[in-house]
Length: 54
Image 1 (cartoon, rainbow, N blue to C red):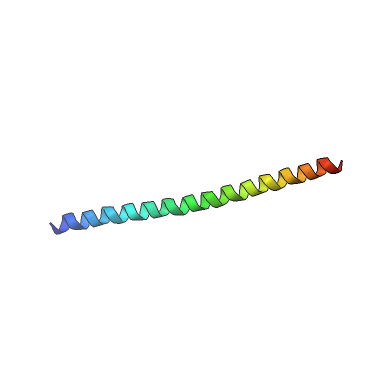
Image 2 (cartoon, one colour):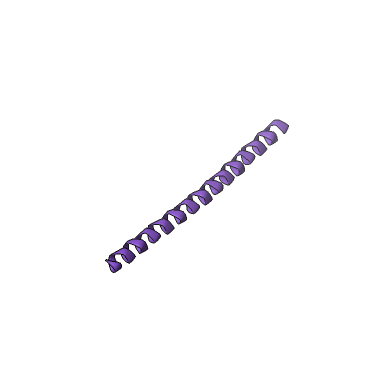
């Protein structure tokens, strides 16, 4: 019975670790997406500004 409990615990620890890693990767991806959206908006604003001044 002790071996079963240890295996059960090991599986749950692996699941918790995996979900935690997914959360970290999702957070990084969200930051990257936000940065890209800001760059796109900034570039669009600059192009609009240049078009108005020309």
